[in-house]
Image (cartoon, rainbow, N blue to C red; front, side, top):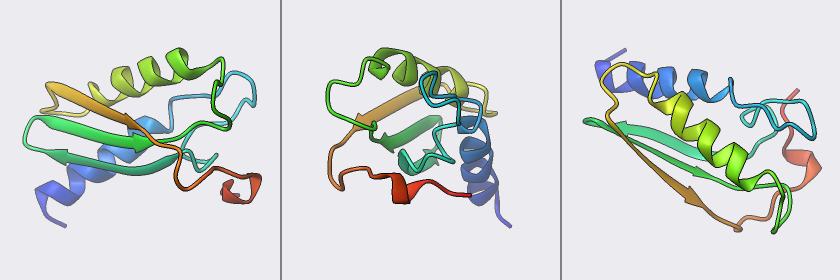
Length: 94
């Protein structure tokens, strides 16, 4: 496994520490993270929420930024909140 793959895996692992307070599961298990990559010093995370207007938007967004900053070499975090595809309970892993 090369360094880029290791850093991407580290980012995905870090994101499992972000818990949706309403559902009590991490955002990776919930299927809310659509993509996560590390490019140089930048971590880029594309994610969604369970519903538009979700009251946890700020908390989850901050959690993503905090978790990504724990990955070695990450100095900047870019988050993209998207609504396509629309999240549904069938996206929960496990």
